[in-house]
Image (cartoon, rainbow over all chains, first blue to last red):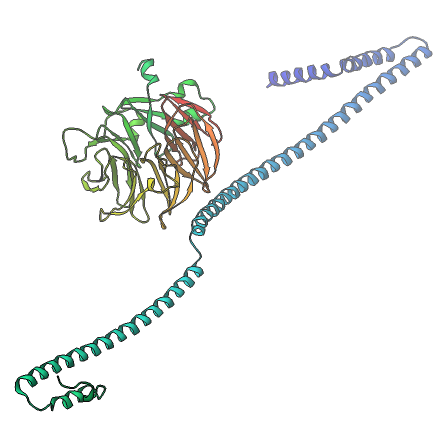
Length: 214
Length: 323
């Protein structure tokens, strides 16, 4: 215990001595001069001058003490100031970290958006190459109409063809019948009754007078 | 491994460990090297940390394809597939967990395996190789479930679309075939070289790189690298990259692609080439992105050199790992 406090005392004294080398010596000198002055046998003027000198050294000691107190205050305040700046900077660091992570998220989002936009653009390019849907629909409609018209015409033509076929068939069959009757006429020499019956077949278009029996 | 062998080494495949701290690379001598990424990326990395922590001969032939599942590293070489447990590899134990061989029709020549991928919904391994067929193996039982036939020449690359349950394969015959994994039938067949805007007849019609992401597909090789919209089966963008691309990946809003040419190309989906970052190997074969880990999020490329370039920031090459 005693050794520790001794060390402390020695350390403190060395520190203090390092700062104001004159102070400690000044106090010792003051004490010595005080004891000498108390035991002085000289004249009262000498005693007075000695007394003045002692007051002077005392004032000096007080002055240096005041100075060190002020320096101590200043150091305390500087420490506070530094503490404040330190906490400020720490806050700034954390907010910057937060901002950085926010920005990173933003950049991820923006990259995704960009990717989607590019995919959209790529597809749009392909789609643009194909013709417009309305136009193709219109073309289809026009083609449909044409098709309908053409099928109409085809039906009409087919009907006409059928009719003509039938008429020709009738004509040919009546000619054949006439041939047959004429042949039978030639063979049997029967009266030409068949002509009236055959004239009724084609509705009086061809009268008997036009086709005299051969 | 003398200096001459180093000169002639090509890195064909790469794969990251499931924890994201290790990289396995396979070369043309049949060796696999395991690198520790965490030590190579740490602030106090030395030259030694850029060499493998473990190198071993896995197969007799080149290791063309590597794939990592949750616990194992699958490597393909010389017509067979071996599985190595990652935990064992980290402890420097090079005993294979299992080795299997698909049923090849001819026993005379053993076709190489060019591409492997896993179909997670079915937990099956899809293998494509030199016998023009795709073999599907169940990972749990090890039984080869089915064979998809249709390609007329060997298969370069495979990709799996999980949501639609489709397997895509690209081959030397220039066709990208889309297979339904349940029926085993070829649903579509896109012959890329027949499309005028993609075709580059001076290079050929083979498809060497294929990758898919939701409705989009990237394919390239002989024809130019092109982005396809799979729903409409039409090419939407063609990338003006000289040289044949060997591997391409979608990453965020960009496309990263490597191939012939001493650079990694960054392209935008619209068809423009944004940047070409130079790297050490003269021609690149493989590109891998470590998305398993947040600390070691790097891009590594390997090719016709014994060095594998590592990019921590996509814009420039940070350092190289050496086989």
